[in-house]
Amino acid sequence: MPAKQVTMTAPRAVISVNGNPIGLIRNLRATETIQRGSVMGCGRLTKKEMPALSITCTWSCDQYLIDLSKTGIPGLNPRNVNSREIYKDTLILAEISVDILVSKKEAVTTEDGIVTESKEGDFCTLTDVYLNSSSWDVTENQISAHNQSGEYLEPVILAK
Picture (tube, one colour):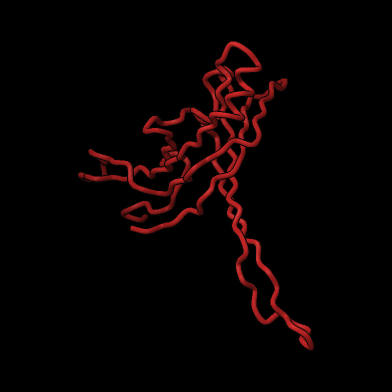
């Protein structure tokens, strides 16, 4: 048995926005897709180069549904307003992105096989996150879910 767990698992993940952990999250998925061009030239059948032209960073998240006003990534979907017009104007005129920080719980002190102190270590940050889609469901014999997805502007980097 290994002395130290290094594999990231769901129970070790702490997902937060503005320093506040997001509760009852089932999964968070980030996908970064690089669009490449083809450089071939006349008289050439195969590609010579494949330069990067753009990168699209997308995310999706599933959470257990408790209440529509309390579930979801905080700050992404300002629905607690008095009218649909105010909601639409807020999306058009005052949309604010958020950063999603994913931390990894790590043992600091272990004595005789018992963890006596732990801390949150860096895993990654999704920067400038925007919401594109939000859905929820209530299904017979199932736990209800709230799903959100969108894009973030900068790719994740792993600098230490």
